[in-house]
Image (tube, rainbow, N blue to C red; front, side, top):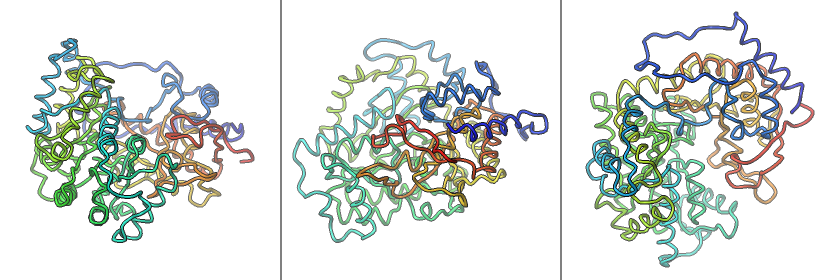
Length: 540
């Protein structure tokens, strides 16, 4: 790394440890929980040089930085990083580790019916995490679509003339980036796919197509539901290319779109469009409870309803969903895929459930434990009870909002309004007015310097969602360029997040000194942000 750059910021980070910078966080009401156990960090907060050396060895890739050496906030992800409750731990002690039909499986079925509705308990497929459920769904759906020769149309470059020109151009642009061997014949629309969801779809020769609402693309900070899908674009797509659409997805909350919620009105509108064309509608439901909280607090007619009632109303509108229990299941491992009893997924793909059961047996074990220990299933059951609690969600989302507001007071541009699980730093805005180009990947630079400060964030922008094909970079379309600070559930206090905000303030105040990076390994790889290595560009 460039010594002058890191030495400068280390000196600034040290200033935060002096008394005149030790501003305490303000608390206006107590937390709805208290600590039952704590774990002391094994590293010193002021050992900046050690973190610089570790980061250099990791090629400036924050995913490769050892978590045990992070003294501050680890905001890399909110997935599987939850601090579980005493009730969950006590339930786990009663775990039944039988190979088949363990006790936790039947308890989970009952709790699924209670949380999501009675029609969800019969077609429950358990996996060790959400992306395994995604893989099972898309690989087996692709098998039906391709292996059984249901294709009755040409490649995607022969699109219908009824398709709106901008939408057609976006599809052709995405196809042009893919290798010929990857060329899909089918499209799966979503408000926005997350990285691994899109990768699972593409791997199975389908095209993930993001249709975020126009308020989101236009940057409307006054819109409380910037996670919505563009229903006009969806209608046009189904009218023009309906035979190519095996199912429709909605991600709640919209992670790639900045953790933004989806309104009940939008869910209902998408469901009506899906019903018109007899196409199944599924949720990526990882943060379903947080989405329900936003509906209760931001949508007319829902203020007097409980979170549980809103959740059941949401899920009554869809035909299936996959979920990572590592988010709103409040556990450290687990996922599931569910189809509504007598829903459109079963009607349209009658052999799919048997294929997925076979997939479970081959990859995860018996379907009644699905790659999870029986004790972990007990933890999920208790987590699904806790997560719909009003007090829990008030504090959870309130903490993320306070973090975002503090960043805004520091002058740091973020996606607004703040979503449910994370704060998204606008990298285009952060470096506005500096000598910066897309190829500098300054979101990577920012996460590297934050790592030296003692806090781990994640770049979710031009590098994570872009691609290197044909000797050049292709930015994501629609454009996203964020660094995400995902707040683990029940893990940190406000003062911890305040320390991360102050490190960001220093970096923003001296942003003209932050250099770009060179990619030393992995630029052309898929899912490259998990594997690549970097170094600061010379001469900055």
